[in-house]
Image 1 (cartoon, rainbow, N blue to C red):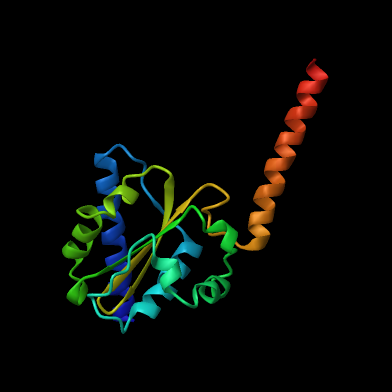
Image 2 (spheres, helix red, strand yellow):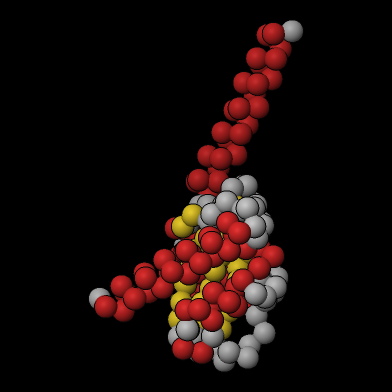
Amino acid sequence: MMRELDVKHDDDHLLQGINSFRQSSNVPPLAKHDNANCLAEEIADQLEDKPCVSNYTASSMPSQLANYPSLLKKCKIDINSTRDGVILPVCVPHRVATLVLTNYTQSQNSRYLNNSKYTGVGMGHEDDWTVLVLATNTPGGTFASKACLLSIITLSHLVSMFLGLFLALVN
């Protein structure tokens, strides 16, 4: 129970630091995202026994996890809703909070954190590893389930259809 509270406190502290960093660049804050959180936790579990010298980058992360599709399935995420998102793993011995934040804000990861297209975040931790999964509000980055993605697509088609109908009636 105490470790659970520590992790929640660590997550809140990290999110607060990241959102302060975004605010300094006039970028809206990230909101917690349940599906991205599930995926971040699953990826952190996969990295648990990997040494800190492992060369994981945002662009190579999914291809370096042989079981990435099964992680998505476990979190009930449609792979088509992950294309625009990004996975940011960092390894800091003993996960010192200030160093974890620095690893995100003072590295190549900062370009993702300063990008306003990312609106949601999930966080996972295991041993020395911290994983952020950044989500967007576009269909290709929502980390949505198939049913939810279908609803988003159907809703956008309905809006387009009604707009077209309205314009046809007005003319």
